[in-house]
Length: 449
Image (cartoon, rainbow, N blue to C red; front, side, top):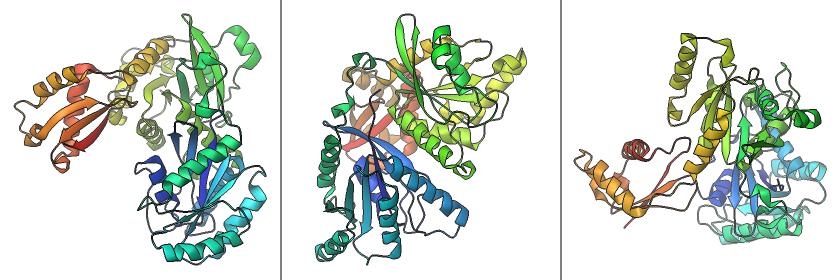
């Protein structure tokens, strides 16, 4: 698989990183707050443009801002790691304030840890006042870290288009493949499946179980009872019934408070990147353990990114008879927000139920690309909205499906503010009853008209 370049946004706490990140991805993703240190986890989003695709990272602030010293240390380790592995760095400086020691601390980190060939774009954020922005320009050049300086305002969209063009320009100069095209065209139609989950749930064992004997001899995954054995994401082509699948085995995703080694921070970063590059995410669960907060967090991360999704319940061979059904019911109850996601009970050890994964991947891949004709959508909508006590639904005059993946439906109404989340949930439930869409999220977009 061709390399997806990494673009990391860095800066001191509260310098406008998350606002810039949200503006670049065109949605409210990162948490925005005036409290320094709000962004704790590194957040990633895949950006697609006509000329270049890349992975954008929003990092925690460097240079202090939180009273929690343990958390602060971990946040800075993640930010430093992003700098070390980024292909392009966006350094944000708050144009409304004088430069601080934290800004200079970021510059010092850049000089020491950035790879020499990696370009830096210095972004003056919050430039709503042009006069103040001019003063900030002279200070920015004084850093001596880059001559590439752009004034922006995430609130007013000022300078955002220029920044987007500059990002693509710099990545092209580094000779990244345009539009991520590979000379090996067999990857174009090959489903990319990321195997994700906590450490030690059997992800690598599953990959080994799919491999042929020859593949295992040449590149079998290391399997151990020690959590965190897999440190990197690894691509493996698996052939089944004359069709190829690209499986990406990832390091286990832990809660950040449990990541104490730099190499585990890197493993987390690689796992996020693997998820972003995938078409379908397979969350591996251990049938012998209860679903915990981390399982739910990983599941939510996959759904938020709009991936095709499958829950794989490993180690089911340990249970027999009615006990299997009890385990399955517990999983369904704990992950109730994943009610439309198929659950596959299986065993990497005995290979029980394992081959069913390929039929499910095919079904999910088809559903996430499925298109419903507009006429059929109108007929469906008349049926589900007719006679409903929810008067607001009658205000919707037109429905159509956008070209986006996952399935995205556009509702046209005179007053979109009257359409509440409960109304959309009702429509989604009815949509799934009629059209299925198993294993894929559904998106709704409101438009006036």
